[in-house]
Image (tube, rainbow, N blue to C red):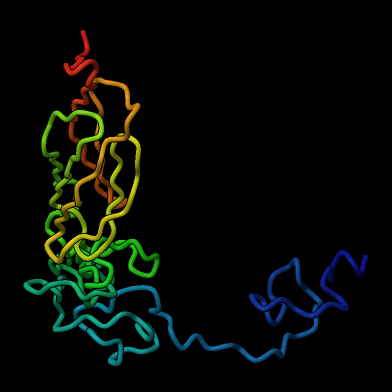
Amino acid sequence: MIEILFPGKGKICPINDRTGKNPSNWGCIKNEEPVKKNTQPGKGGVCPTNDPDGKKNPSKNGGCTPRRGGLLNPGKGGVCPINDREGKNYPNWGCTPRPIEKTKVKPCPKNDPTGKNPSNKGCKPTNPQAKGKCSVSVSPTSVYVGHNVRVRGAGFAPNTAVTVSVPGATFGVPTSGLGQFATNGHSVPLGTHFGSYTVTASDGTNTCRASLNVFQVEGGGAVVND
């Protein structure tokens, strides 16, 4: 019967009913635990216009986000700062969104104009013709076996090596500071079949081609492809 009249007997009263006034807590031991004071009751909200910094009534607005000048959009008319590009934080409300700046690409160094070295990956080619604007020509365009042919090129990476392939041979040729090259006379080997051949030149980034016709001489006359 006593337990029914005093259901809280032997227990410490809860914080929300420190003295056991609620019938469900009758008979409980008074809760002497110190009351924790909320020093920032306004935290998470914006200070009201009548207390823009929360200092006028700290018991109610302490910890609130200051309202500059009582304005609803204190950032209006300015560009949002880098750390708050869209103006989501109160001091920046109303600011003009800050666009994301494009990363500036550094130009490739002179000793690596096309960025072949991994340390220069992504650099901007310093050779204006380093993006496939090369050209190759052969002279003459038609030649008999055993005769010489010369190859010229332009628009390649400057001060580097270009690999040239002609009928019967592949060799390297240095380019000038303007990305140009010219080979010495290359003799088309005897035994080379008559027909049309492709002469190529490549610096590893740019590859260009030119056609070369090869004729054979038999019995004093030129034998051409039927």
